[in-house]
Length: 301
Image (cartoon, rainbow, N blue to C red; front, top):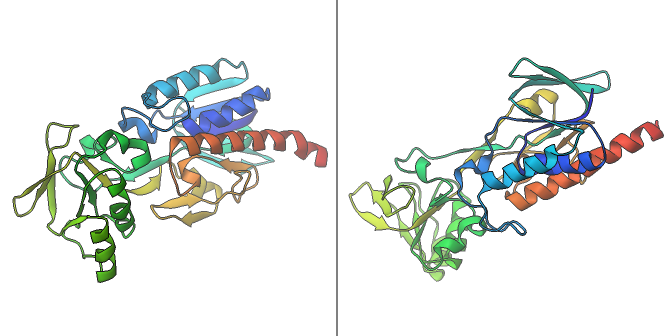
């Protein structure tokens, strides 16, 4: 019987584990080695770690957490989880069955990218979502925004902070007159033609090839990708899920507890705005809240 099983060992999960380890609680971290930011070569904006490769940051964090004797790390995927007898049973892809008093869900998200040749190999490098994470590196250079959802208009209005922008409608419906006026005030060019490919020597981006044969030269393309949970465990446990602007969001309270007692969640799966700093901070809150529940719930009973 572990005190806590953490499903997901990236920024949120490891931050939660550190708090619990320092509270001398037995923690098992289950991780499949597929963090959402695995496509990025550098992580920006994280306190004291600006520009560091995210995989190196995670290796360092894992080593720090693993140094605590009460922590166990398992490389596996969780196949199932259920509440039973005041705790939780967890089944792993390696055939192992585990049990814990509490769960922390931190398994992360998948990004569903548009099916455009040349996009996937540039994702996280020159095809990107967050300008705070990756915008400064392209400062003052020609940029693009790809329309993927209604919120793309917000991106098109916002990204000119970093450089001149072309808004690619990709054959979709154009904005209304009021929106066009706002985009014009931001000097955003609107390109209605469908996009057929991203070109250049990947991961660098030379430009966007359009259906009429033209190449619009840009150095980075911003887009909002639809997201989905990397694991169905939250649904299986009965956790409440809300519709976020990009995809599903696990409903949590101020202590990061889900609608299911004893199940906490942290990171991108539990908030609408995503970055490594938020994920780590939510993990700290979840870890501390779980530890306090382990201490005070038996007293209250």
